[in-house]
Image (cartoon, rainbow, N blue to C red; front, side, top):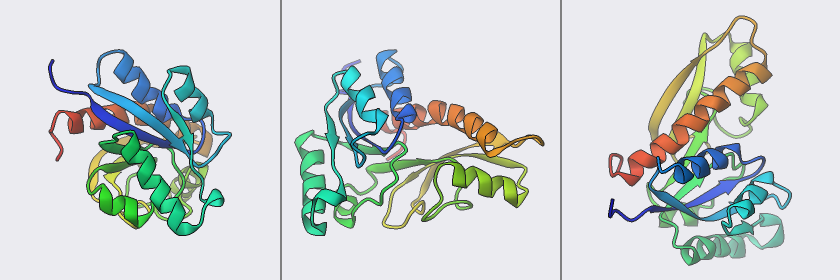
Length: 199
């Protein structure tokens, strides 16, 4: 296949298990992409260790270290210097600056552990999402991949996959099952973008 791999910048805030699913899909030859940089707002994020293990450049970029404008400018500089074509939010918990969104229109995607537009928005992340889903009495949850715009969990939905809720589910058991689906869905959607099936 002569097609050049799609160059990814992957953003993480924690363990980086979604990052690992992308790395695994690339390593197995299922995904024609290359991660050129992993960026985290959290210097102790395990996702940075995962990147280093595969010799992927790992950069800490936190708004705590910069003025607002300098943070935005540096964010863009990092993405451009690593030649990033698609920005992938893989458990990244910070809002992407508008300047970055403007420079990467329809080239920033996020994965969310629920069926948007329900259970999204500011403060809806991690276990909070699964608790809210169970408290609501919903019969199913799932995974959503969407383009990122300047509101939390708001941009155009690209792909959703449902996960049934079991009667004895706790936030933890639901989280585990949803995460397993995330690990299948995220590389698949990146692959669809790499193949030009999603513009």
